[in-house]
Amino acid sequence: MNNLSFTLDVDASLERAPWLRSAVVENLQHQSEMNKLTGRVGELQPSADGEDGIDKQEDGFSWTQTPEEVEIRIECVPESTSRDVKVKFLPTRVEAKIKAMTVLSINFFAPVDPDGCTWTFEKNGQPTLVLSCEKMDGVSWPQMKK
Image 1 (cartoon, one colour):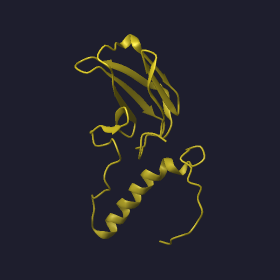
Image 2 (cartoon, one colour; image 1 turned 180 degrees about the vertical axis):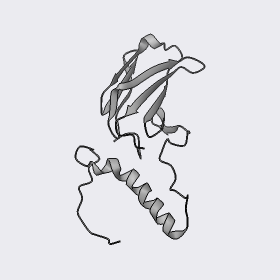
Image 3 (spheres, helix red, strand yellow; image 1 turned 60 degrees about the vertical axis):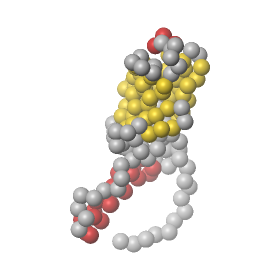
């Protein structure tokens, strides 16, 4: 193994830095190979944010993920209904409005398939808008948004 020095433009935009998409998987493969050499078979780095089944809290929403999907939960005001909800799924972003007020507008870490995205409105207890987004690349994201 050799270390190399090089200059790299660290732009979070996946169009300009596609290596970011594969970095997590490549890192896990490298770590697994190193663990075999050092006798620490089965040990892996901690899971990525939102992967452990515990909602990762962000400003105004929470989320969890699997390699195939990301789920976003937004608590709504008690008088909200599903008729008040408008959601716009785009490949690199999502916008959600309740009663014409924007409750979420974020750029995703990586692209999703808008045709594989859905939303539901849970009314048991605190009304909650749940967005389910199908990832395009099927890898874990180190963070939710750019």
